[in-house]
Image (cartoon, rainbow, N blue to C red; front, side):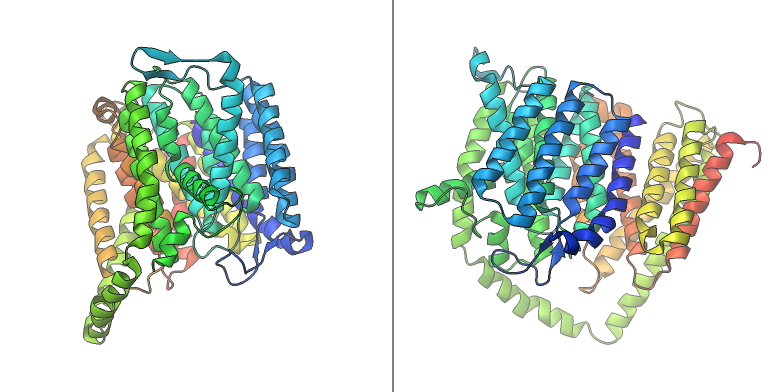
Length: 553
């Protein structure tokens, strides 16, 4: 439960601070203006990284176990924040940026005492570990991760989404294998990313800036370093596969620049996301495609984890050599011409033929499906506080805090209601779903209704699929939906014994369906916020009441 509080606290702090720093961006000269390599068409604040840094830093300082790791992380973040904000404002020379990164990494290594250590059996019968090169290799690894994430921050939600996938893989694998040391850092960072993605999904209203991308890369590197030290046996290929697209894309682009006689740090439009846009993909399609590619790398990393290190190293070397070949080969394919033909011959005729009665019927069915989603969600939120009794006092207090915050925000700042209602709704769902999945092991008042709970989610799944089929091109496309689906997909790569014992695949699937239903209803242009917020706040309040006075109902 402590890890959940870290996630929620970082998300709330970040989501609450982002609008504050957005308002200050013009005064501080932290606006990202159109032109050059930028694809946006109007000035956008790049202060999201400051909000993320404060959200993560405060959560680590007050909710995480204190020790050398936290001290090193906070010190490194402070250095990167100073240099990052200066770069966002003044466009620093890359050598000054690299110097700031090196200072942050050196401070982190000195305070935390962490290093890569044993690299495992990279060659059969040969375990690699050299103390003389340990710290230089560790520093190089952290600098590489910082710059990989920094250079991948080219589309709305791309760097943050890729980082969230990496963090999710660390959390899932750590829990499955009982390696919990990286979890506080991973959960605090993931929470801040979730809070930031609320504003950074396409079309973004705020960017994280160089300050945010460098800090995010640093935290990702520190998390993976901590994760690697806890692996048994050691398999460094796992963390390389987890880094996937950002690392290989950066390596490919830098090699290309060197071959062309340019500095490897010279900015251009040759990254994989630029290539996808040039080939005719829309913004959200390019982001989703890269998410999918990143998921494939992470899946391979999960599969090679129990294998000898030399097998993982060989597979990663094969992937690293194949990536630039696929990259350059794809650039030469007439993919953009193919997309134009698909649009002209298939999509446009379908859109024109769908006008009239067919469109009206589809819209009517869509409204019925959304109504069904709302009824199912409302029934779930009302019934579950009754079914999951007895409710621990700690859960009751948390639910009461969420309900009070939502009501307070509704009165003082209605524009921020969404983030508080959604986090409260996800907290409810997480507790309710986990409790009901284990109802036969921990007897509850509503154990006999577990079958009804499963039927309810089966109906919600059908409604979700129907909505995806009926939604037309005007429906809001949210890359976060696909990101959450990707996180759930990763669960199925865990050991079968762990899945069957802890039912994480069922829990993950039900939470995904709940998430998609809630997002669909909230993003419906015809919805009224209070009508959506009322059952969530009511469920939170009922949970709080029944935690202390279960005999009332």
